[in-house]
Length: 188
Image 1 (cartoon, rainbow, N blue to C red):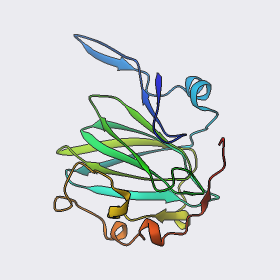
Image 2: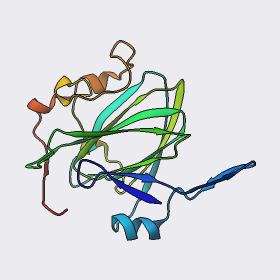
Image 3: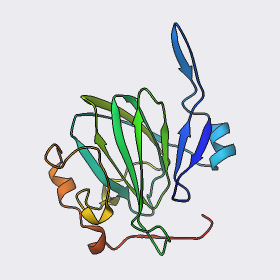
């Protein structure tokens, strides 16, 4: 796998080696040994899958400490615009984001560390995404910032008129009104 650095330290795009021929393709979607060697010792404990139709926007979600999650996201059907927003107080990139198109065709994966809010928009007719988490889900630790916050300047690849949002996701605070539970620690 190739690990591609992004504009925000700690957020990575992962490109697996895909072996294809006339019969189809094969790739290793996750190797604990290689992940540890290239990105660090992160133990994933839960796998999630989400199916959505065109125009769905989900996010921007996170879990509050002590149940904060790092995620490894991939798209197994369709195409999404996947986004990570830095919400670590004191971070030189606070409020900035990384966006990447993940698709069943490009096989890219997106590593989002703790201290980031995560969301996506569906660009294809339907989509299935899978993601690994290094902490179990705890409903009492749910948090979010507004996916509609224009100050974040995120190009979701769809218009707001096309967007399908849950009521929950329309009620999260904007970044300016948000008191983050995460604190930036240099070299982490």
